[in-house]
Length: 331
Image 1 (cartoon, rainbow, N blue to C red):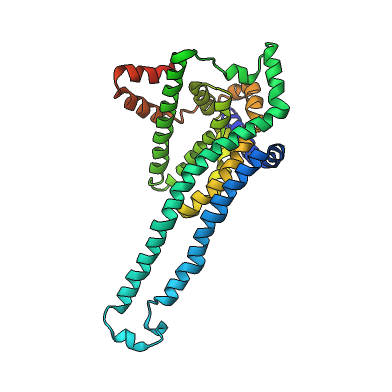
Image 2 (cartoon, one colour):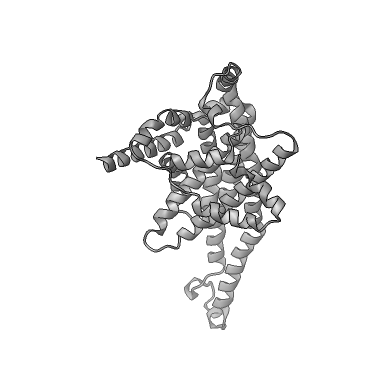
């Protein structure tokens, strides 16, 4: 009975996360409230959808077939069969065709890929900021007034006021350094699991779901000033919800080539960031945590390896800097 209760609660939270991720109507509502948000989201679609994915479509549908027609690999495709008598013609055509395709990648796709990553990263932050501001027109203003009346909320429970002044700045920098290291190591974990036989793809899908879910909610937590250790504790405590939330993100890219997957993810990611921004399920889940505990479910240490490796790397820093960065454990 206890096992069935755990399975039922896990499945319930997973489906709740999946449902929240699919609430894309929030994107439309928020975009209607903010012209800046609508513009940034449209720019994201234009760059990553029309230009990036469009370029891949043109390459695969027009450029490569044209090269195969101009530089064939069979004698039957030659206009003059005398060319077949020349030694090395087919090999030269094959080399030239491959070189021209690679030239397209080097001169266009790879620079566009890097440009898209840099610009999209800036735009994602803007999208989250404008989405958060659009939420404030109806809900956050009420939360602000309620906090002034000293009425506790779930967000207030997770909010930890850090020290002001230089000390607060150093702790903030330390948390950012640790967070970057943690997620970088976790990304390497995700990549490595893909090489595990039999169960590697399944583990890779699960870890990717968690990673994208964390990225989506991180913007919201940043604006709410939720301390890093609180984020990790909450994320690992309600891991089925976040696995469900990240599943649609991963499912959309899991079966495509790396470049196509990036283009699709770059389009979809801001949509899921906005659905996370507008989600209230975190508060609902926190309010019903007694049911979660009663079912015997425990915190899952998703970031355990990444945490240990990150702290080891930070320990290699000079003592003073390492202590400042690791102060996030004490906050």
